[in-house]
Image (tube, rainbow, N blue to C red):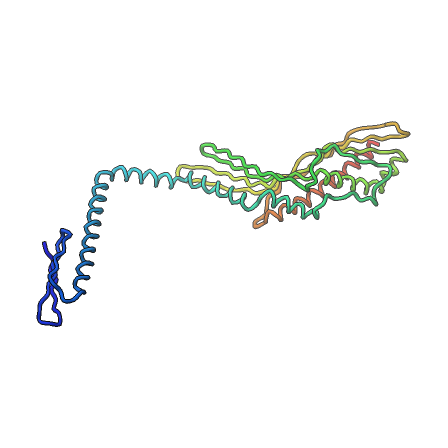
Length: 307
């Protein structure tokens, strides 16, 4: 099969170029170079068309032999990715990763330290009585204001999932001890010193609340073709009671001793809508200091009854 291109030069002589599909080019003598370049481009175009036609033919044969398997694979993948359980699982994991990326232990400790002006509260020496001494049996900690550790627990049941993601901050034991000492010193000048009547009182803080957790708990229920999930974000305080032992000395002899326990009344507190974790932590630290002060005040009431 031949393709013929005819044209006229500026003279009277007719010119013709002949092409074949067998990758051969027959060119009769030309007086212009333009027709030769055009023939070469047409040859390349025909070669490309031949390659593409072969590729299409191979692809059609591939579909003819493997289409049933491809259809089954495609259906399986669509069913897998459209599974409500998979979608909810990805959503739950994404929520955990998002919370973890926004809040880190370093950020939490830095913020708590700022709330305490980067130092452990000090005992108010102006209110400190000469007849009362303090000590603590609380676990010793570093000079850091707090130590935060993240923890995530996943309970993947068949139709019910629970993801508990939390950041637990343990405060320096000196904070509770200082709050206790300052409150007892304040109450001492309002009747406790008179109650001692010159005797010496030794107080030892054996147990006190010293931590809290910022919790993001996600629940998910899987139905037949749907899944329902919801989140609850809240502050979980330390529920340890305040336990203080005392010794009453007179003339270097212990005449009375005992141990007083004050119940901790703090409960979980949910975050408000659009409340940031910084605002929630700031409120928790304020409540923590107030709670230790209230328990210390209740301790003094019980102590005066015992004395």
